[in-house]
Image 1 (cartoon, rainbow, N blue to C red):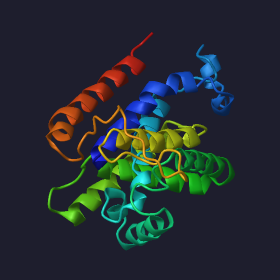
Image 2: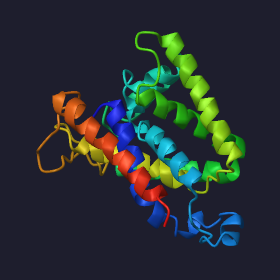
Image 3: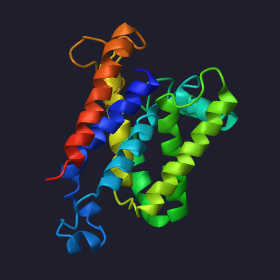
Length: 243
């Protein structure tokens, strides 16, 4: 699947799963203001729901770090390109180790550890994933790399400042990253090439049963992308609607 499709499916996965996941002890560190307002202490507020959707969209791009030509590999210039070449070699090529359940779980635990142990590292990860999400959905000026980069940086900084002003907590960062990576794997399992979900086993899984969506073809661009966009808007209205 293409980058924007992965980003949108990541956002959809978080918006769909966040409310039930909010009951997990892992997320039960919400500030006392929720109790004061009569809302369950382990509930996610609207800002955290939206922040999680944006970050999950960025995390859904991480498995493609094994592809030197992918959006994520081009996002931060030579640095991410060189890292992509290394990951490509270590993971056995594109759609290797990074396109697996093991990678999603490992990235989720790594992000959770980072969020709890190193606040500065956590904030850097959040900023990078927000920027990656904006890049994936095509924010920028067509044909103008410098202008697009400046817009991306400005919007990323603006969103992060908003999250700070709304006191967004990141107890859920590990879950978001893991869910985003898993959404990517599931999406690529719907393409004709499939993914080695149970890596290091080499068997590739294709869902649903050999239908095989062809990456970048008309179905993905003309039908799937609009459907996913409507789904995101619908989920946002549903999750944020007053009870």
